[in-house]
Image (cartoon, rainbow, N blue to C red; front, side, top):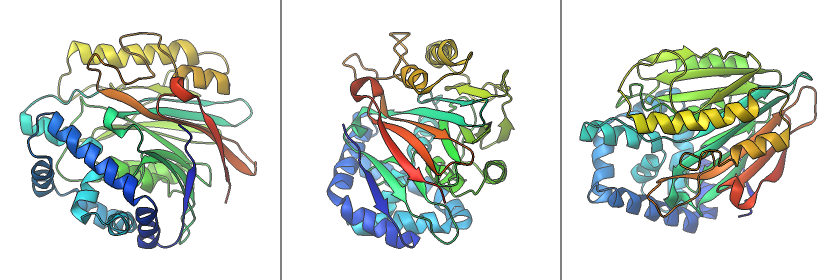
Length: 362
C-alpha cells in the first residue's frame, strides 16, 4: 500500500479541521472498524463502553493542562470529519483503552505490541525505527502526516491512522520518537495518554528538551519511549508510578520490545506473553546488536520472521493472532545535513516494502 504524506498547516484547530475534512470518509471507516473491534472483543455495545471509559477516566484534564494545542487539534479533526468530539478524543486512547479494559476486568494487560531499535553510527548519524503493532482493524486506515511548523514548534513527519494525532515520527530539527507498550507496569485513569505524549515530544527542539518532557510530564500509561537525535539515543520506561531510564549494555544502541529492561515491577505477566516479547527482542539482537547496521539491515530486522510463532513483522493471520504490524518507520538523523530521510511501510514491511520520504530541516 502506497502511503502519501498529507500536508497540514495553520493553528492547531485549523490544521485539525483541514485534516478532518480531507479524511472524513477514511476517519468514519476507521471509527466504525474500531468500534466493531471493541464489540468483537466482548465489551458490549461499543459506544456505551467508550462513554463509560471517558466517564471513569480524566485523561482530557491532563492533556488540556499540559498540551492544549493538541486538544484543539483533536477537536478540529472531529469538527472537520463531522464526528463527536468525545468519540474522537477516545480514538486517541489506544493504550489507555487497553489498560482500562484490563482494570475493568481485573485482568493483567497482556497485549504485546511494537518492536523498536536505534543505533548511533560512528559518523554521528543515528538510525531509529519501529514496527507499530495494533489491531488488524487498522489495516487500510494508515496515514502519514507532514505537519508544518507553528508558533515556534518544529514541523514533523508523523505516522498515524485516520483520525489519530500520531503514533510515531520524527520532527524537522531531527528529534525522533518511537514507543513500546510495557503491560507489566502500572497505569492510571489520569495523566497524559501516549498519543499526546508522542506528539508533545515531537515538538521538542532537541533531545535534551524531549528527555526533560518525558521525565516531568505525568504519564497515564505504561510505555517505553525511545528518543533520538543525530549522535545520541535515550531510552525511558514510563508508567503511572514514574519514569526510569534504561541504560543499554552498549551506549550506541537500544533494542526494545514489550517487557521492562530495568527493574520489573507491576502486574505479573504470563509465560506466553513474556515469550512473545523475548523472542522479538532476541530477533532484533541477533540482527542489530553488533557491527554497523545499514538501511538494508534495519529493514530486514523489522520485516523478520525469525520465530514463526513470535515474529517481529506481524501479518494478519487466521489463527487468532490479534496483533498486526499497522506500519513501520525508519529514520536517518544526520548532523549538519539539509534534510531527514525516512522510510515508511503502510502495513507489514514484508508485504510491500518501504517507501522513502524526505523532510527538510528547519
